[in-house]
Image 1 (cartoon, helix red, strand yellow):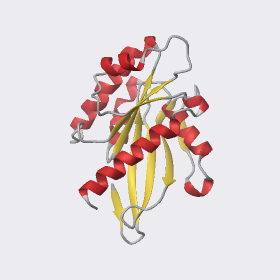
Image 2 (image 1 turned 90 degrees about the horizontal axis):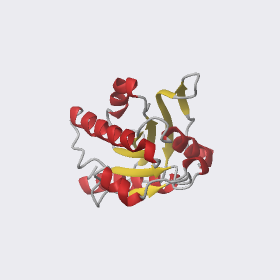
Image 3 (image 1 turned 180 degrees about the horizontal axis):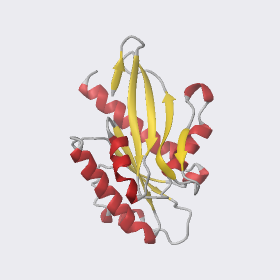
Image 4 (image 1 turned 45 degrees about the vertical axis):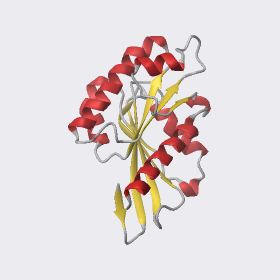
Length: 196
């Protein structure tokens, strides 16, 4: 969180985290496409020739007022590929909340688990209390055949009962805004409880 008192702005950082090809970039693309242009910035994306995110995707959203300040939500994704670990950790610096995007296919269960464990480790290394940092989980790709039940995925990923979980089909926009709204509410709620 960064407060610019002169401009009366509250800058908040939300990071979409998850394994490769889980739908992190698709979430940001959908948010960008469905948000009024006067409320969002440009979507900046760095990709490889194979259309995979190399470093991050970035989108700025402006919504409402918090304690007399205009909140600006800076949305980032991290590259899911394992060999970009340093980039993922770098993008997490200064984070105010994390949306973990999990792939609902059985073949991706282990990748989801490893990615969530990496997230928790990086947060600890950066000095965050992973139990206090707002976290929302999105189980994406729910339209595919034979996806895992939500209850099984929640148990396998060891998510406690207070962690909000949303089902999504990001390529169709289903669940994308529900997930983001839940995260924004958690981040803003935490700030209001702590005072600005």
